[in-house]
Image (tube, rainbow, N blue to C red; front, top):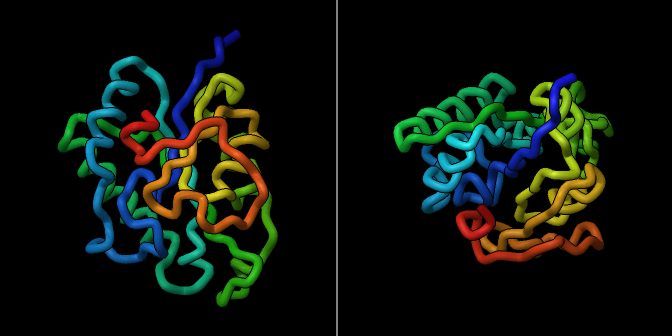
Amino acid sequence: MVKKRPAIILDRDGVLTQRPFLTWRKDQLKLSEGIAKEISFFNKNKIPVVVISNQGVVARGLISEKGVETLNQILQKRLKNKGAYIDKFYFCPHHPNATIKKYRTVCKCRKPNTGMFKLAAKEFDIDLKKSITIGDMTQDILAGKQAKTTTILVKSGHGGSDKKYKVEPDYKVSNARKAL
């Protein structure tokens, strides 16, 4: 039997990157200050770091799924240049009000649902109850709570200002670096 381990679960836009808004171009990608150094600590200690992100930009037709994967590869390369890496990027391309019909659905993967959390837990033998979810929106915090993780809301990015869901994080910090 494989022993389950904790993980760090990050939102992408507004946590891993500085831009909390829709992101679909390379020039919009900028790593959050100091985050690579913090991620490298977990890498060195064999604690998985995964990104779980809604990417409604696909559903809106601003970028393809392949395009999102390319942006994630760019982020991975930038992290590797700083001695860090993400174990895996997960993203949901769906949106209930999608412009593109094939993505117009209410799915189990789109946060605040926990489908991507369950998939990551299975693929990396993650104990979600011992894991930490870091996000900048209430959907991130609700998803983390529903997945039974400890939740941290970063005030950078949206800082929970979306107020879409009535949920309180376990902790609040000013930025992603302080969350890690």
